Image: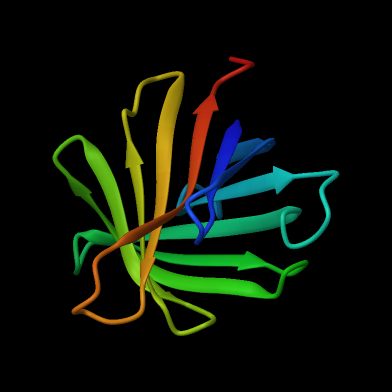
Length: 135
């Protein structure tokens, strides 16, 4: 994957990385692993997400954890048209919106946004452009 980090001053940083997705817990959940190696922290990332579907809310309970950077987030994810949108809060107390867009069988565009209150507008912080390299 290619990562774009949007900094507060309007500049961007770019890195490459890897992500892996698979069914776990006998098909009851999806786990993904995100890796951005060989960068000075906090740009280095080794994290995992567990996504568990809940038919009562017609959505997914999502738990993200990056132990290296002591970053975690809880969200609820649902389909919105052709996209998947996850809403929640991170370990700093900021509201988060993570969107999977432009989803195909071999690629997706992930957009990470945050805001400090309901009255603030969403600010893009990260983007991941992922593509399948192995079937």
